[in-house]
Image (cartoon, rainbow, N blue to C red; front, side, top):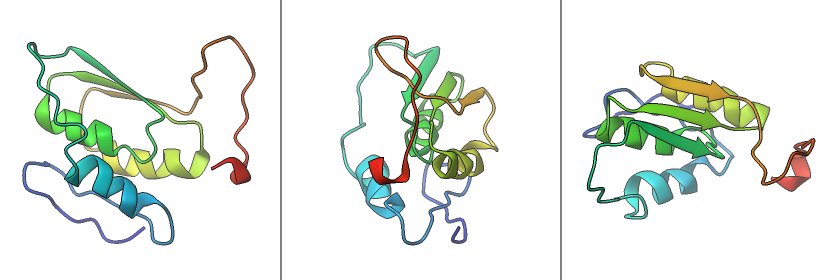
Length: 113
């Protein structure tokens, strides 16, 4: 992990890993306009399925601090990094699991990532 760094509007530091896809994901989630959603309501529950390192959850908790976030991430290293990024926030349920459209047994292989 690199040192945590702070962003305006984000309560706690964000941690990225060197030599991974964390930096481009950071650009996509935190810098790009992809998740600047305009909702006509305040969400009570937000599901981050495929949470990676938890940046979407951090962004949503920054916008909707009272929402409960459910983070689902099957990869062990991503899950560990996600826990580091979301640990200071209240109202987060972190699950090291996968999500699929039918009941199956899933496995994560390093070459699949």
